[in-house]
Length: 600
Image (tube, rainbow, N blue to C red; front, side, top):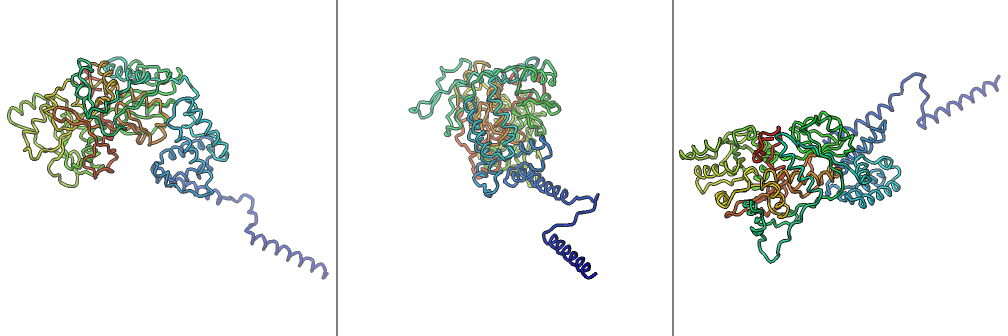
């Protein structure tokens, strides 16, 4: 019996030792069958929520922390669609990093995935400005080499969609663009002007003449202009900007892409998009009219679209970018320009119309965003009504009602922004002079709506000192191009602005992928200095000019209008928004091109 008891006792000691060893090693006994094991899943959910919280808190602003969160989330993607979405969003944030952010990046030695992403970004940025097939082949080879060097990077197996599209576009030498414009009805005249600019840009723009270095102020002889271009000649004699970067319009891409034109006034938009898809169109430029652009938000289409208008309430759609000419954007531009000249109490003079109300609201909202306080508004009536007041000795007093209520009281008006036609302006300025003393004159600013052909030296002399903005095409920085536009449209500035829009639409269409992916996109266009802001909306900065002793001089100052960053510069002259004054919100009223500013 004793040996048996000893054996059992020894066996018990062995089991006890084994159990102790398991506990020390961190092992646990198996759980009973059917008991849930939720702890690991809970941990995964907590990790996903933590990374997602970092992303949500960033509000689409790029940072190293957000990019790391996206990289961490990739491993939790449950299917190919979710994985591709993660890659696309990671890439979009990377391309939005500013040069300063890139220079300040510090990553850990073991962050191989992040290092791979940054190397891919460097390859892309080194080749992003290239558009011909040979250069795209170089980019393709560089990416292939990157995939070999980073085989474990998730993007090595499936590139972000934007890169895939860029490389595929390079393979397709017969890419097709669909141009969606109204070619019948009241808006036909506007659609025709944009179409002409678009197709002319495809053929290549005329080169500007080189200035003669022996001349202190290069100018164009009158004899070189069309006979009907009296006012244009004076604009072409404007003194050039001191900054060469701002005195040129970029060359357009010359290629053999097929352009198919579709008439948006003939068929519903859904049918046209389907037809374009069947025709092999890969990019749609248009539509132009605002109701059609609003329809796009309700239509699902795989086609990329460069809409030639924008929404009142911006919406982020991955396949749509917006390029427009609007009076509201011009008003925002003017607010920034006036703010940078250190004015503090602006008055907005507007027509007694719905257009005037919209412009005043846009100006006031931008002014308060910059840090300004009260903006006053005052409306004016018809030219006949103003003449009657003038005959009675009644001028325009520098007073008005607040556009938007502000906390502090306003002081004396020191800037007046006038939204008027040239005919209205010839009455408004003398009425302002009647009501104020010469020692207290505010600075006067006018929208491009007042800039039209046919205004001779007398008009310019009467407007002496007033500042105004307009598109680069109308400043004379490319004389042959301005002559070409003047001859095509009988020197009608409204249609020449739309012609410039068509030129820039062609350039944007040829760089659509780059435009979608980065806020650093930049183009010196015929309609303005173009860049990209939120929701892939094109931002246009315009040159400012001034009437000076019966001449029109270009402003030489070159500070960029980036909100309040330049508020310490009293002479800042930037123009940060679409400033063409063309309002394409409805369907057109009449065929008079001078009515473009408030009719479409």
